[in-house]
Image (cartoon, each protein chain N blue to C red):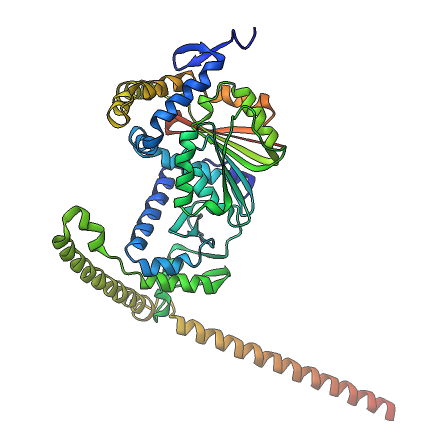
Length: 223
Length: 250
């Protein structure tokens, strides 16, 4: 962290927001002890998430009973992920496995296996809404809410997936505004092919010139 | 003037210099068991956010040694323990045995006993070797120390060159309207909450009074400069109700 960064006062609102997110994550982890135990295996690891626009960083320190989030850290992260908000969302929420255009380049430095494991754990997390609400609503109502919440989030996840697909299809295929990832890949292949063709042609020209120079040299010797 | 004749403030009272320490000890013995609950109530939870901001400015790295002075129930020490990791060390220090007992139990419960130590110390004459710590924090504690100048000099001595001191403390609101509202709230509500929760209104009357007797932002910064700290600065929080002072040893 630079001296300039160190002199910036941490914002009350952003610190409160980060504390709220941290609390939400840890509360969710407490309702799923199996996933929490798997996360705790990585205790002591530091994950940096850097958003390019607006410039912002969040450091997640994994601890035995969950995670701690910070806006700044002087420690070297075990893995750092950097990109635009959309690209990061695509990477962390696993959108980029879908065909389409959402999910641009994300820069990952450090232990990418750790990031993959944490992503897998996040997708496995099963929040027990019933356990969260039971002290407030009683067990019967909590079970109903838990059932409803699971259905709702299952539907929401599917709907979000469909939305991403549809946006990808529209922007990439129907509107033609942005090339699809496949088109970009094929274009890259074509560029590579042309580059290699040009390289080969240049080599042949060099050989031809060398042969001509050699032939003209032999000719002048004969005369 | 001899030490026997010197007086200092204990809230709004003038007391013999030697007595303040015992009187402050009495306050914290009385409230130790419910200290965190009371902090949450009187600050409406904001003390946790202020401590988070302190941790962020502390810039702790794995392997470092940290002294959490007047660390009481160990809020900061637990976080520091996790940040310094297996190779670092955190000392939770307080002059008050009752507060330390609560803090020690919390450190054990949080699984932080492997890299933390608990020490009953007087902040005015810290029993550590010169150049020991990378960082010292004192959160809501400097106000209660009788000889603040001696404490600041002692902290400077045990800091490593390049190390930093962070003082989180009640201070002077920068807005007059806010100051009036805060005065009304603290003098009217805190003692009543103290009576209700820990059956001790006097301790929270002392808290409100001691805040008004504490040096304001610029005065404390001057004291840190005088003690020998470099690059001193402060950050006002909650409109100056609390200020975080920081200084380095070079």
